[in-house]
Image (cartoon, rainbow, N blue to C red):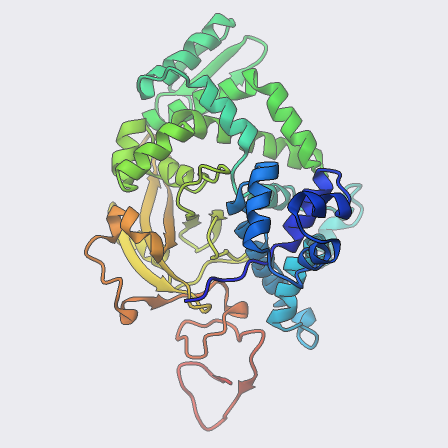
Length: 466
């Protein structure tokens, strides 16, 4: 089989600009002509093997970065935005979307920002009575969405924070040693740590320099919250520098992102990158074994596995998602070609929704998306007790998965019939951008298909997708 040609013009151009090199100088260092470089930067030619080798040898560039990144995310996000009814008569073909994402990613992001602003304007107009007379009724991105997109396009991996957490855990002899180090450091700084029966899982009183943690929370949660507070108090400069780089548009987004970065530090400290990656490979990504080894919860382990994207030392590209019982996505990330809907819920044919029906069990699913890519997906329900009979119980389901080509590295793939096409269930991303013609769970028609409506015939759907 012929090797797939590598088109990475935007990344090649971005790298040259970061190095502040002219095309002429860059071409000289790569050993190619100026016209050839220009054609590669504009995706008129694929990157040759000699250019890829020169990038690695001359600039120390991680060549795996050439085939990963924003392109698939941008394609998925643009397709979803273009599924908006406002584009019903003008939506471009898939080829144009991919061309824009590959050749003009900045333009693609600008389009997504514009569409997001449009949606927010529509939502504001829909509740005009609430918006009228308010001083803050100006157009700006949702802080939550802005932060979500920041982590989304960072590949859910924040290198500086990850490495800082790994340095903090140097000399680690087990899960408790990291927690003890954080506790001892905080106490040496004059912080009083009190475990009480209060309802908030964590409360830091700056006036009395007291950290309150709840006895009602499980040990994994308390470990995480302790490390989170350590990050807020001892990694302030690092967190603020990262936030400056992100350039959030509102103080609320910056505040949410700061908690997100502290969360990231806590997870990375509980599960240090190199040690965790080594253990994950050795245990064949057995979530329960990894949870025991690192004193973490199943959800914490699954989330951490989705962040192992360090250049030059990447783990398996996983997708990770958490949904509530209504199907709303509350956490999402994908280092795979599968990208989640930005708005609305996940495909109802996905096993993550069935996890609520089988509490405490892992569900395995072989699935195939409309683009023909096959995945193995693992789902399980997650129950978060409030710590008392009258306290509310929160229920979620999580899914972790990867392309089936990595199945040998997953213990959950054992005994599955990976070579049988009929074993793979058809799933999609969002009904509006899913091109399947015969899906029995379709809620709305697909964007790029014509419909046939026959008043004399009623099938599973009230229309036929052409």
